[in-house]
Image 1 (cartoon, rainbow, N blue to C red):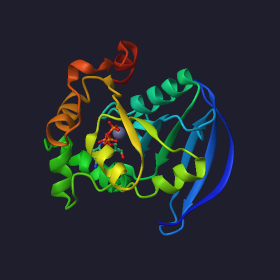
Image 2 (image 1 turned 45 degrees about the vertical axis):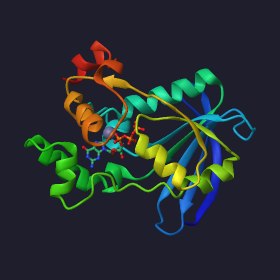
Image 3 (image 1 turned 90 degrees about the vertical axis):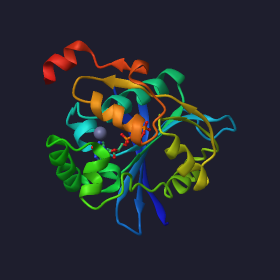
Image 4 (image 1 turned 180 degrees about the horizontal axis):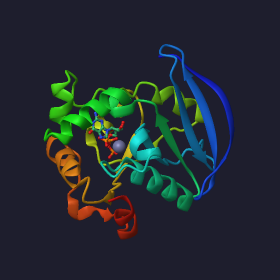
Length: 211
Ligand SMILES: Nc1nc2c(ncn2[C@@H]2O[C@H](COP(=O)(O)OP(=O)(O)OP(=O)(O)O)[C@@H](O)[C@H]2O)c(=O)[nH]1
Ligand SMILES: [Zn+2]
């Protein structure tokens, strides 16, 4: 794993002005970014999120999943804390890529769930890797994370790769009629530690606008 830091800049957002750090994975040629706020290089554990790319949810307002809602909520919580880090990893579709994710969505439109769709395409349910996180966090000086996630397998995978996760912080937001089945499948088949009762719903205005 060869992660090379390229450049950093200011990134104003509705929640705070973050610092945007750009990295290149020399092995794959993929680029990844981190957003930081405040001094993340102290000894105290830092509020953090390891977010995997979801073009549809993060940028195109998709309500099929909870990714976009989680991204916004994570940035908001970091802003409220005044300090934190978000790694934005370019491993779209749980690692199968955007076009295969669209193929998987097509199968889900026909009745498959998110896990079955991946398997019908010949992929594992979750093909993501987290070995780039340690070099990115080392560069930023982050020593320990309070990780915002509902996914205990992500915590295990990160810990195996050497990331010091001292606490898991739930991130249940964005429930809506289009992602209810998907979220239930994540809890039932992928081991996410959440029930639909934990969720802050997407606002009624958002649901109406995107129906
Ligand atoms: N293959 C596939 N990928 C999906 C689907 N829905 C979302 N994704 C991708 O799943 C990734 C996010 O993973 P999730 O399983 O939603 O959540 P997580 O990151 O494991 O857990 P949290 O930290 O709680 O969000 C992103 O890369 C999305 O592009 C789907 O139906 N099929
Ligand atoms: Zn998504």
